[in-house]
View 1: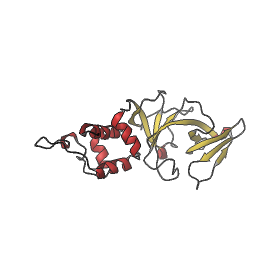
View 2: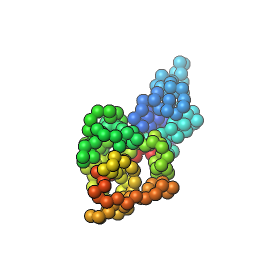
View 3: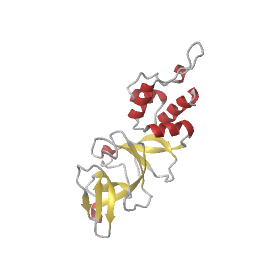
View 4: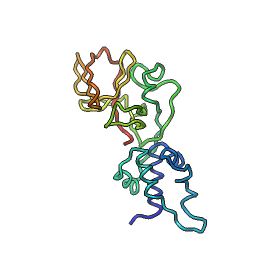
Length: 208
């Protein structure tokens, strides 16, 4: 049987997972900012106040979280022990945010708390637009490990020498060619020479 504390704890963990406060989660969900506040969880006369099914559903939709993931949050606390630099994907092609190896540098980065990532140089990108549906939607956050080895079938972030930044799946990589599959079937695949690529980083986590 679910308890009052379990449900509210799961909502707190959901907010934490998205890098938000309970109030921030409520705002993102289109609810009154105080909806998930701790002061709202017990009435003035001491009765337990439960979140409505509608408010929970809106929170799951706003964070692109499946119901089975929410159930896991009721029982298992995700370890949010690392803050990583956060940047919008649309900004990533601009100069000054990465060094030649694809490691984050410079100012202008935000921060987000995420489950522990083994790469101390990992960073997060916030997806914008619909070009990566259904794999990623606008507002999803992906964590990139510039130190991770990249294998065929991995989802990767690629920056070209012309400054273009894209999220693709690595189909094939040889000394002469790099073949990249688009995550959205309505967008074309790409084939590049290694000399056209500045760096490739593997996606190791996504907020879905």
